[in-house]
Length: 95
Image (cartoon, rainbow, N blue to C red; front, side, top):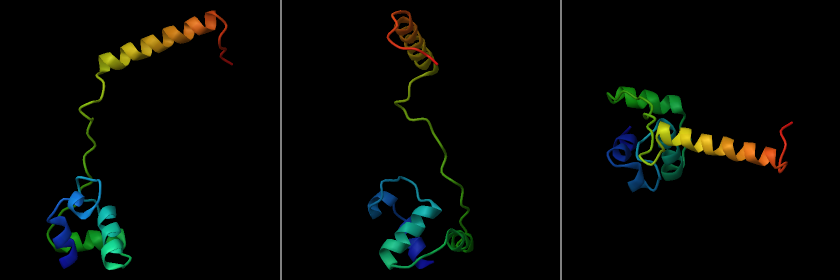
């Protein structure tokens, strides 16, 4: 449990991972790498619970660079128009 407490006190990035949030799976990977031991997800969850933590999966968020609904609709409209033009010019066919 000491190991878990130590690593989760810092960002996973500081421990060489590309994630911003600790997950149970990431903690198991870190233990394998740092301590050379295999730890199951259930063991990590039990340890977190004993330490008073409640584990919830990281929230799925939309990236700031994601296109808006309007932009997506416009892109789809352009693609449909392009496909129709190619069909008309016999550059492709749909089977």
